[in-house]
Image 1 (spheres, rainbow, N blue to C red):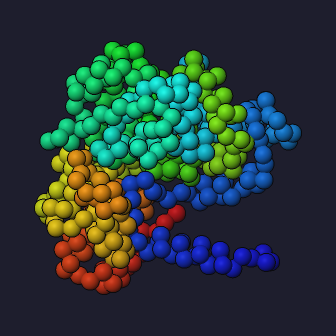
Image 2: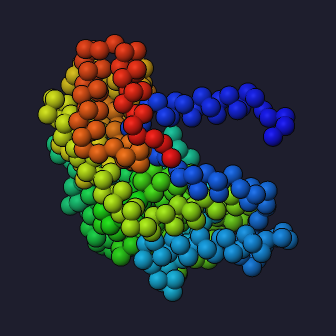
Length: 408
């Protein structure tokens, strides 16, 4: 192709090289398939499609209509949902947007929503003080237990009875244990609240049958399409049919304009890939790898929050090793291992320099790594954090190590 943008092309090559040469342990990242990347870069990026199938504000949308309906059907099929009882909106541009539009659909401005405390594993859009959600609605937050760092459902029930929220949000961005959606449904029913589940992190695990499904209990379920679902960035809002009109209006025209049709195409690809038998094997290995890596690090004296994991991620309190989460993140990055600094429950340190790091296994599992490699990675992490090996030497070792595990 003539007139290539050499500057951007150079950066793409640099990023490709960085991804190939590092061990990616960021829980919210993964590698998209070649088919997914081709879809996101397809001619669908040329189209503008305000509205919904059969009700567009622009001409030339007959193919887009078919694409959007295909994506909707695949989402319902993946999660074994009856189209008579459930609907899905595939237009939300991100997980944060999906949550906003769901709140706007169900909860009048200023009324009360209950969600998980951000510093205890929740998400920014679950009413964190720095999020617009905290300024639009009144929030009350449930913590995890101060000793086990797990949900104490009886305490959540008592808090709900006291606060009487209109909506309860279940779902986390840094919680390593199985979430009991049945208990959350009981809490919601007791106080007459809607139950919304944000399954962004565990959507792939649910699709693969590794984590219990929220659909028998939730009124609305939101999710991103990357992370464990292994698609390109995007979002879904799945809802009981009775909320279809409110949700669709909240997304368009109230929330955003035309959807990103190329994103819809890529989501359709990811949903199809997640229905393959190989995907169940993949998500099972994600969890096995997370359990193994947490176990190996625990054996080396690292303080694993909740003592282990049931899913794809876990938190480590690195202050027990004499450093902050920011220190640990930077040391590991210089050695070619990427994690993210993260607050831990009841953290006394600031968010930009917290006590912990978060580790996840979706991306390394996509590259074909298994328990044996988790042992090797635990040793690399320990050698760097304990400063037994200089980062530049470890970086060369990491580069050699990952060559055996190609990226898609």
